[in-house]
Length: 174
Image 1 (cartoon, rainbow, N blue to C red):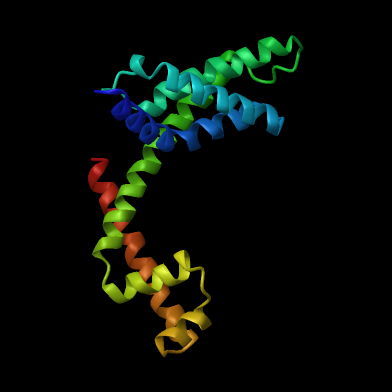
Image 2 (cartoon, rainbow, N blue to C red; image 1 turned 180 degrees about the vertical axis):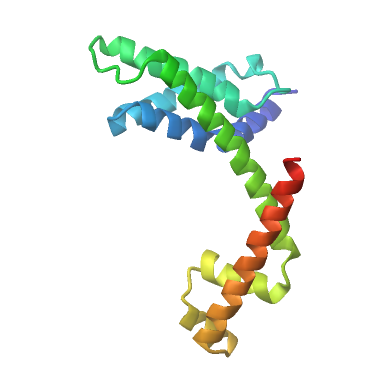
């Protein structure tokens, strides 16, 4: 893999892992700016050490392992009794966030597949409501319908989507 390919791969991995890493760091460090700085340092370290990453394992787990070390280092360099969490608790928090990140990824994949299976009209209604952030009244005007009808159709589309996602996740978790 050349340097450009590595950069692209790292960027993809980081974009997927960043929400979990940020959640972990912000849960561990109470001061916003300190937490933000630690997340930036983690991203830099991950980029620098990306050659050490075993692509056969989840990137988020590796990123959280490094994040845990950086949070501990942060508190050690503070040189004060501000350490609110023990090393063990920080490790448990990292493990929990990693497990949740895996679940979010499965739910996201199920959501994307289920959205593709919706009838075009239902998909358009959901896009107008959630992507376009339009109200039922605005959607009704655009589609030549009533806002009551739009609300009913949105409820049906959301119900169908939720059922589809639940079915997919049940099949994947067997």
